[in-house]
Amino acid sequence: MTVSPADEILDIVDEDDRVVAQAPRGEAYARGLRHRCVFVQARDAEGRIFVHRRTPTKLVFPSLYDMFVGGVVGAGESYDEAALREAEEELGVRGLPRPVPLFRFLYEGEPTVPGAPAPTWWAAVYEVRCTLPVDPQVEEVAWHTFLTRTELTERLGTWEWVPDGLAAYRRLVAPRPE
Image (cartoon, rainbow, N blue to C red):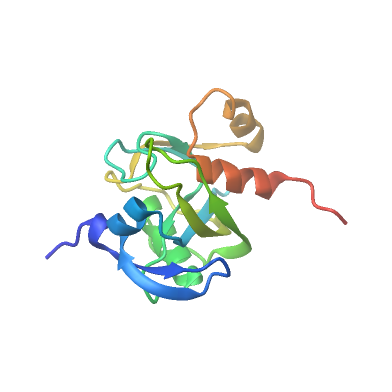
């Protein structure tokens, strides 16, 4: 029996990322319940960044571009486990090295539908080198390519990006105080 993505059980967390409850993904989205997600920046052997357009059937941010692969962290799953699982699933590969954790942040977005709660989740950002040929999941990825950081930057103002991925990318490339 296949479980619908909307029925997948997620850990619901507080402002300090402590588990306080569990709920189906569809309910978490509909009620704006804070949960956990992972974002993995995948680079090829040349250091280019995997960029893709999400399918129109995605529950959140359909048909938008993203510079990360990833998704929700399942109930009882660690961020590290979810990062590897999501990266392998979306890239369509097996045998990736374990993604390297970079940072976490609380994403608080704008409502996607008038009157709906604002999306909010803890996001753990990772990076991984993928030297394997990719074969992305057709259910998740409508189009993909690898871009240099310069090429990606040139498209930031012209393509419509997922807002949470864009927020993570801006944090990733922001100058850090020494």
